[in-house]
Length: 109
Image (cartoon, rainbow, N blue to C red; front, side, top):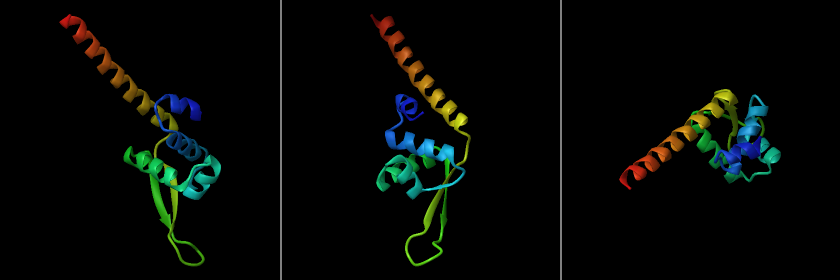
């Protein structure tokens, strides 16, 4: 699944994070790091992209013991099928624009 998402122009961290999110109802960034073998900054960048597209919800939970930063919990806000449809629509739109440009070039020659 990750390789197919990569072929659709998603970065490796985004593809891996998306697959992790699709397999669990709610997951921490640390769990994503361990499952995907990504580093923390890569997970953060991937989550920003997913949040920007409104595909993920981020919730902070205070640690039960000790001090420190709250734990971030991530959850998909839309089904994976809808995300794939969104990616498909974006790619089709891009390709249609390219085809229109090619057609304009042909008309100019």
